[in-house]
Figure 1 (cartoon, rainbow, N blue to C red):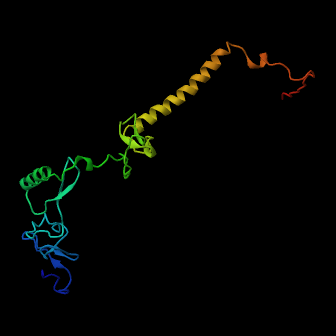
Figure 2: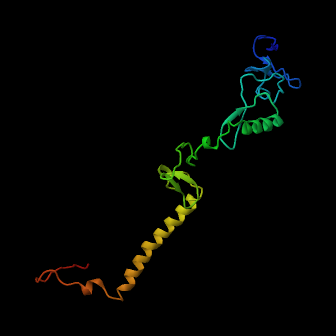
Figure 3: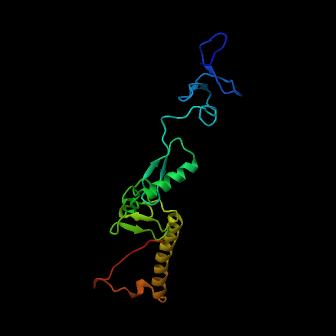
Amino acid sequence: MAAGGTEAFPDLGKHCQHSECNQLDFLPFQCNRCQKVFCLEHRSYKSHECTKPDQNSRKVVVCEICSSSIETTGRNEDDEKLILEKHVSSGDCDPKKKKKPTCGARRCKEVLTFSNTCICKTCHLKVCLKHRFPADHECNKASSAGAAAAGGGGRRSNDKFLVAWASRNGKDCAKNAKPSSSKPSIFSVKIF
């Protein structure tokens, strides 16, 4: 373990064991591979160039033909290509096992079939029926399309008003109105 602390508190904190750092850190990190102590900046495997292999992690390659994953832990990229070629020639690779397409909406894992697939008219994304509206699948063109639709809707109601106003042809509504009763109405207005 790395020695640390101050003169007054020798057990407080540890020094970073990176060769170029040696910073005193009061909340040090211990690498689970090489068991050395590091500061926040050098805690990742890559930043302190950890020499021990990681036994806990697994690395896989996904076959594009059948969507099956093949473990390649501890091998370099050239070996990965050979492993994929061996998988394809072994007879285990079956295109019928290929995964079905899923909904393009965020966090939706619904499998798209003929009857539940909808293509968005604005962003052309394939989504399930639940996410068919632009607001439901965070359509990237929805904000501009929504603003245009809102502006167009305002114009339509304004146009209807102008058409109705022009159709009056200068006629006043009060002049065309018929009295509702035969009795004359009497109103008195005082002007001061």
